[in-house]
Image 1 (cartoon, rainbow, N blue to C red):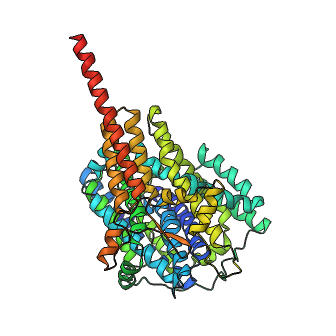
Image 2 (image 1 turned 135 degrees about the vertical axis):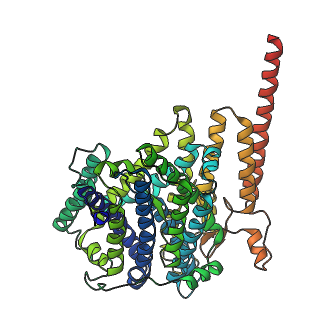
Image 3 (image 1 turned 120 degrees about the vertical axis):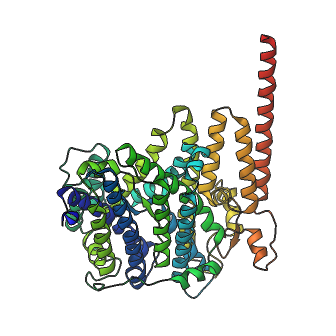
Length: 544
């Protein structure tokens, strides 16, 4: 019976993990119900059960790995890898995949925009899981090939815009509850106090935020239209393969790939780093199987209805310090599974206002931005800033597009982004066309631009030329910069994919201006590289 004993450390680790995951669910659920306008039947009946499946897959497997390591080493202090929903991927899939898909479906007058958006999210999640699975076989090589600052600053832009500014606006929308919780969260999370392990900072923030929410009118949360007990009941997960397959014909594959590819590659490398962090804390786990199951958990999520990828979390040393071992991971999987399958999350969302938890997400964005500098040498700081700019620009364009789409016309003309609107804005000094071009595939663009800047700072101009050539090829293919205006919105179009569907593309190069621009930049870098080599050879000749 000793094998089934749950110690105090596992209970403490479970409470901390459950609260962290509860915060994720408290943000995720209102995003689906509010921002995306999904129905309760879809969110409570399909998406949350899919999340439960992914949690059970990952948490049970990593508990098994911890048990196996205990048997191998004869130790009893091995802590399982923490695992849960990938925060960056949540916001990427909501704001960059599902929301654009729904807005475009509505603009085109399609019959079920909600289903189209959800299916696009399922496809993005599944593709992300496949990339994570395949990346497990080459994670170490990717980590060596891509500069760290180019990877981390890519997410820094997401942290600054989609996790930072967006939620700062929401804090100020309800200042009586938002401002006090905002600064309390920063006090507890930026420079943590020595709190008892059974009293996690996130728990204090949720408790204080909930109390203030009820005192100031921010709670109960009734804006989502859900009665607190209306969804209570068992919601078992069901396979959604048909919807996943339908998405391959409806979704904008170019948009999905441009978002999922860099996020997934970064997720693979971040998970690898978290495994290394666990090894540094004394718990060695096999890299490839750990990464493979991470990818399989994400694929399982998509197959059972969740558009949200999972990830090996940062923070293993903290859980180990709490005394958590293998059982906390099992408890976490069961606890989150119960929340997602029972329909009780609707009551929790009604009880706890979003203001109680959004500052924790803001803090995550802040940490991601700070990490871009903390993990980079000082002379690479400009590369970190350059890597953040496309993400911030993308958030601005999403906001602008939402505002423009909300304008009411009296003559029946198309609302949103039209050629005449972009021309009038350019004449007024607002170069939205350039911003839209930067938004398309901005995560890939951020990675490329940051890598080029690193090469410039390190005076490795041959590498800058090589990355510029890669950027030119990707722009020509259509994963970055290329777009067409359709029904008041900007649509990514890959000419090759258009041709494969039997339709003749208007042009074979998706973004001709950017493609040639990168080629010219590559030529300039190569000339500088050759001049430096000639100059270096001349100096060596003088010394001899």
